[in-house]
Structures are given as C-alpha cells and as structure tokens.
Image 1: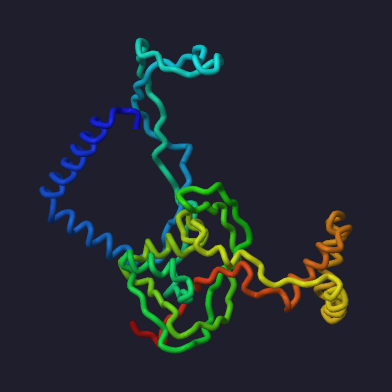
Image 2: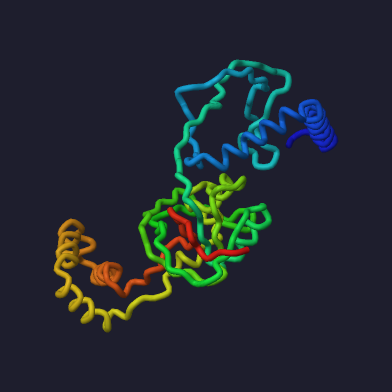
Length: 294
C-alpha cells in the first residue's frame, strides 16, 4: 500500500496474468479438483469454522528491512519513527503458518429460516443457495440456539461486529408459517451455509449484526404489580425459591438488590419473553416429509 499507484496497478496486472496463464495450462486438473472439492463439501458431516494459531510450530523466512530509528518530529517536536534506508538488513524470522480447528460444527439435515429475515434470505439467494419454501404452516421439533453472551466492536463498513459468541442449544418445538424457507444441507453451498448461519462462526450473519432484533427484550414488568405475582409464583414453585435463596447466600450484592431479585424471578417464570435472545434460524435433525415447494 506504500508503493506508487502505478507500481501497485502493474503488479496486480502481472499477478492476474500469471494466474490466467496457469489456469489455461491446467484446465482438466483444475476441473477435476474442483469437482472433488464440491463432492467433499456436499458429503462431509463436520466443518471447521474457526482456527487458532499453532504457536509450537512454524516455518522460517528471510525478512528484509531497514533499521528503525527515532528522530524529533517536525510537527510535534516529540520522537517519531522513521526507517533509515542507508542501513538495510535481513534476518531469519519465524513464520507462523499452521493453524488448528478451534470451532467445529456438525451440519444439520436442514436449516429453516422465517421469511421475515429478508435481508439474510436475499443474500443467500445472491450466493446461489438452493432453497425451498413451506407450502403450509407446520410445528417442528428443532435445535434452537439461545444467545448467552458476546462482545461488540466499534462500527466498521456500516456494521458493528460481534465476537466471542456463546450460546445454549435447546430442543424447542416451534411453529413456522407458510412461505418460510427450508434449506437442505446437501448442496455445494454447505460450507457457506454453516459459515453464515451458525451464529458463533466468525463471519456469520449474527456476527455482522443482521439479527439484532432478537437481542432486544420487548416485554417486561412493573415492579409494584409483579411483586405479589412473583411471591405467589415462588410459593407454588419451591425448587425455584430454593435456587433463589442459594443465589442470595452466594452473592451478597444480589441479596441487597431487590430489583435484581425480581428480575431473576421474572426470568425463571413463565411470563419471561420466550423469544428473547432466541436465534431465529433453526436446525432440523430430520427434514423428511416436509410440505415444501419452490
């Protein structure tokens, strides 16, 4: 990026020319390798979605550079970095180019996406994903994720990025409407599907905040009304009451916070919003006999 623009353009041109020349000389081999890659993608059951650097293993490369020095800045008068081109050097440095899977996911038989998430559906269509639609409303046993925690970075390219996503997977019976999308994971787009639809994948639609509405709690309670209801609920559910008392003993700050305790009871009650932090894309372990069409 620090080279003159003309040099950058010509280096890109020559690289592309070399790639085109190589491809033209190896058409049959590339075609065969590509076909095998598609078959592997369609048939494999587990996909590695993220990797961690293997810091115990590395290669070695020759690095060429200039000695780094400091001199007074003409702007601030304070020390600034500069590279002395009269003192070039080269040395061997470790090159860490080995990675181990840190996140592996088993593919489902199919994903099912409510049609309301049109921004995601549109992008799947643009990337050639084969999709079917429910011809009638159904109720299905699903594997459904609930978002437990995540970290968020500053805005970038019109989005802000979620990382460190942790989830809980539950078996949940859910209702789906006519027109919702069913995507079988037996196609060339398998890797793309898992990379984008598994919420803890580093480049998933969840990571790039396409599913923000599920993170917003839409229902809550008025404390003065819920107090009596919560007390009655605890009387009728002694196991929940015992769990609350255990938490109070273990957490003095919680024990001294009445609002936090009411919130805790609410979240353990049947009145808590069931779809709060529920990831809307469901996984189907068995996708046979669904009423689907194009």
